[in-house]
Length: 145
Image (cartoon, rainbow, N blue to C red; front, side):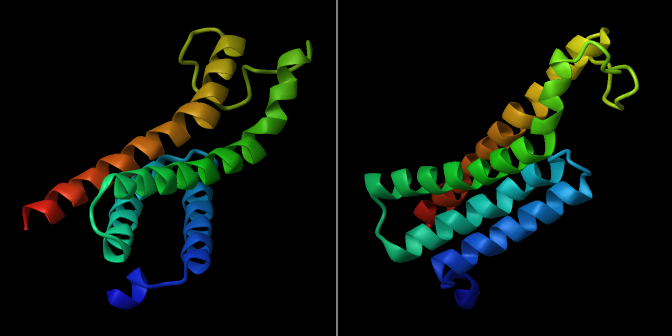
């Protein structure tokens, strides 16, 4: 376990990026597995930061910074995947009805806009929330020992 926690920071980051890409690929562009990946990543970030420093205000800032960095990777991947479809909003001949997204707002174009907002902005934010939640659960457990 110590070998995994003592990985070089760049190696650990590239391993995370690889796993995140795999999770998004398995979800076919829907980052539900990446959101769930936030839980073990939050644990890993916290354990790694705790190992390197004593608990202080700087520890919390480092955990938050690393959590934002990991969800930023998912945000960039979502921009790459879904960003090209934004141009459809300005195309009057775009067929939103047969795009394949759920009609959550009962109108094809509005549902498409909602789908893009969900994929590009809300999903990385949910991953950030799951990472921070797992981080602070790990901190609570560590502090209670």
